[in-house]
Amino acid sequence: MKLLISNDDGIFAQGIRSLANALAAAGHDVSVVCPDRERSATGHGLTLHQPIRAEIVESIFDPAIKAWACSGTPADCVKLALWALLDKPPDFVLAGINHGPNLGTDIICSGTVSAAMEGIMEGIPSIAFSLASYASLEFEPAVNFAVTLLSQLEKQPMAKPMLLNVNIPAVKQAEITGVAIARQGIRRYFDIFQKRTDPRGKTYYWLAGELLEDVEETSETSDLLDIPTDVQAIRDHKITITPLQYNLTCGRDLQSLQDWKFKGFTMN
Image 1: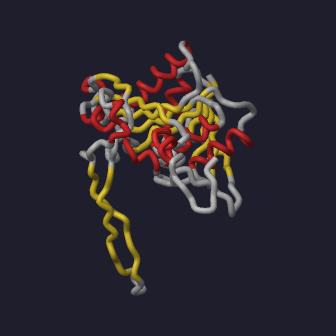
Image 2: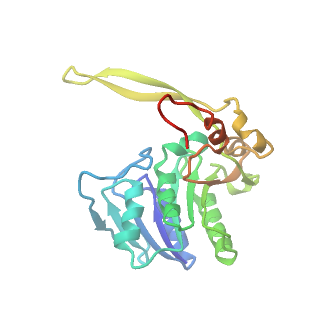
């Protein structure tokens, strides 16, 4: 298959190099377009007020791989690839393998998920891959699963294009307990801004935070409570697959809002 791969960790990240090389070795036609530097937690930001540059990259990836380093965000990279760099659309847009998890509500800020989201917005099936550890460099189990998943999807295509958010636990392959189709969980932080002073005596702030995963579920997910969350499944050393969508409309509340009244305005 023809594959486009991007990330938010940058062109030199081991995760994207491992994924791209393995998929090329498996016989796929692989193109890489990713940021020229770390662009984590940029969400779906786009570059609008300055030019975007893309430089051909050699020697980092397998010689069969066409690669560009882009000055923009992860979403920029995919958009640029689809509309300017590639000769035809890919069969899949892939993002990752990310250095660190993309679980629960963290996906809102994730550049990795946003790169894949840009693909599905163009009607191309997309997958975001993340290794659930910032410290581990053991990407082999994640790479093996990615190759297996793409092989399966090549033989049994999706019924319709969708975005799959895949997280792989940072354990040895023999310790992975299975694969879970999971719903999105909740991850919140006690955000802490550390106040510091630079060498010139000026104040600046550094965003830190303490992770809080055990957050009470809301009633909005009550009909899905029998399905495990991605947060819990990763704790159980399971690979998680969560289908995501870009339509953020809260369907449950559409009807209740019809009862709102605004003086001087009519509701249609």
